[in-house]
Every structure is written in C-alpha cells, then in structure tokens.
Length: 119
Image (cartoon, rainbow, N blue to C red):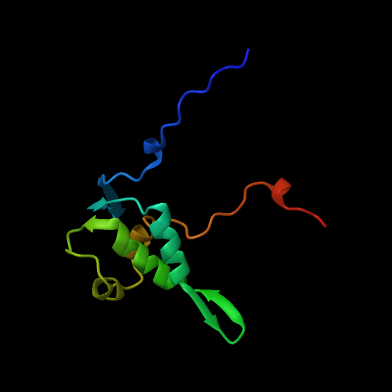
C-alpha cells in the first residue's frame, strides 16, 4: 500500500513581514536593533547588483553587498535610519564587527565533496 503524502502547504515557505529584536554585545554594552529577514529574491537581486564587470573580468563588491544588506535588514536602530551616510561614517570598530554578524552570506558553499564531478 502506498502511503498518501499530506497536502503541500506552500504558505509555510513565504517570507513573513515579521520583525525580530536582536541584542548585540558591543564591548559589554547592549545594542538593541529591530531586524527583518532578507528574502530569497531580494538577496539574489542584491548579489546580482554587486557584481563588477571590467576588461574581461568579473568581480564581486563585498563592501557594497554588506552595506546594502545592512540597510535592508535593519528596520529600527538607535541612530535612526540605517543609510549610506551612517554606514560610511563608521570606523573599523567593535560596532562594525557586531553589525557584520547581521549580514547574510552572499554565497553558500557546498558541504559535500560528492557534488564535485570528475570528468
């Protein structure tokens, strides 16, 4: 007898408009931020926008990706709107290191060597 699969619930996989509160530790101080997830389509669009083409080469602008991702995920912060002016005003500090933890990886690597095909 074949076991009947339950009906597929596609709504489980939709991005929710929920906003989460995260507390980051910045040198022993609590930084509370309200963030939202970076959806699949928005992330892929952002990754595409960060490719740099020139003279037969293709590169990836990690700096731009990080800034744009932070602007997309941070909904509410003590400094107000997370914008380009705010982000470029930051120095290399524990605050920037803490904010970097919120940036979703642009690319995911395969965890299995079995996926590498030999010709």
